[in-house]
Length: 248
Image 1 (cartoon, rainbow, N blue to C red):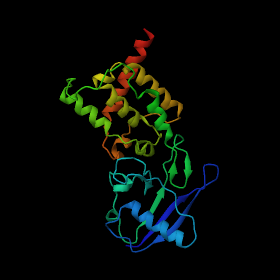
Image 2 (cartoon, rainbow, N blue to C red):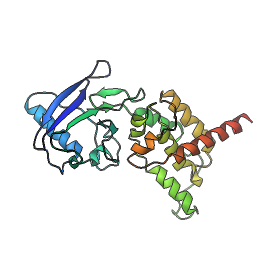
Image 3 (cartoon, rainbow, N blue to C red):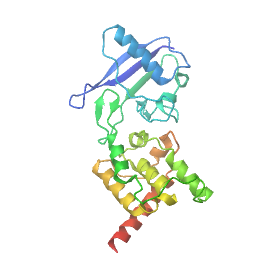
Image 4 (cartoon, helix red, strand yellow):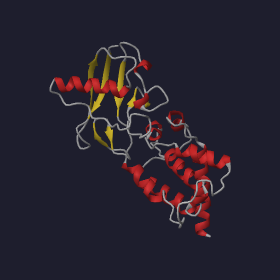
């Protein structure tokens, strides 16, 4: 298939960016979106032009680095990561618009690459267990109810890609933060830090200047790992309970 690509090009976060149009030809339906971008960059290099900078690592839908805003959707028209999006999702002659995540907390580094280290700082603020857990124990030594374990593991599937922020009109990071709080706080090993964790992680989220949640559900609708809005409700309950406990 032959495609027209409108791609955001920006040298760095100090300079203004702009949309640049490129043509790519003979793209296979079986290519992933990132493989199509590789084809474009090979052509640009042959012409002596600078290739388009974009993030990628595992290309298996695990690392969360392939953060592209494609035709108005984080990661593209399918509910998956960009690296797992295949070109069969598009048609011959299509025009595809490709942009970086748009959020104050995710400043553009170059072209389609954004700095997502704000997520790392949020995790560092409370994503740990400080209680002495002793030596390594057998995985089944601590009994955990099946429904609790399932909820914790569902929350733990969050890959921190930032699609929730990109989808939200307020650039809120609450789906990501609530997933991390849930998967740690639901398990017995994380109960000791529960109150401190939720307050510290939310405080760091606010410090990173992400927006507030207004419950539109766009984040969950676009999340490639189907993280549930239930986690946000749980986080809010835990936060208010922790505040009351700390002020008592």
